[in-house]
Length: 104
Image 1: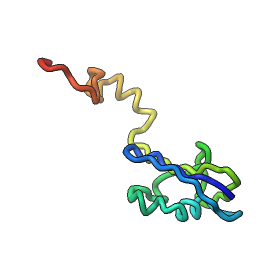
Image 2: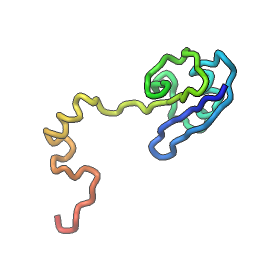
Image 3: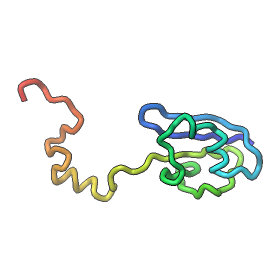
Image 4: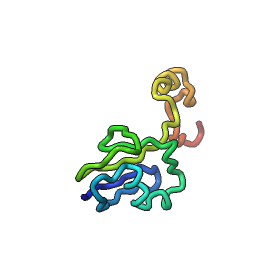
């Protein structure tokens, strides 16, 4: 059956199609794809995985046409992000990541 495997790496995203046997699990598809050798930062014990945007356990059996997704770990708690922005934890001037004009 045909499935796809994707990984949203910030610098070099990956998306590939695979033919797998009926009964193939998320873990087996990821291992068979070769993506673990290409991206050393993927740790299946740390990274969440899912199908079409829904987090699933590695033992989930795939169906025809499934898109297996490997997610990046969250680096900031989404509940505190708005608070950090309000309190100025990002620098406070709203220019985080932006270049400042000369003379500032």
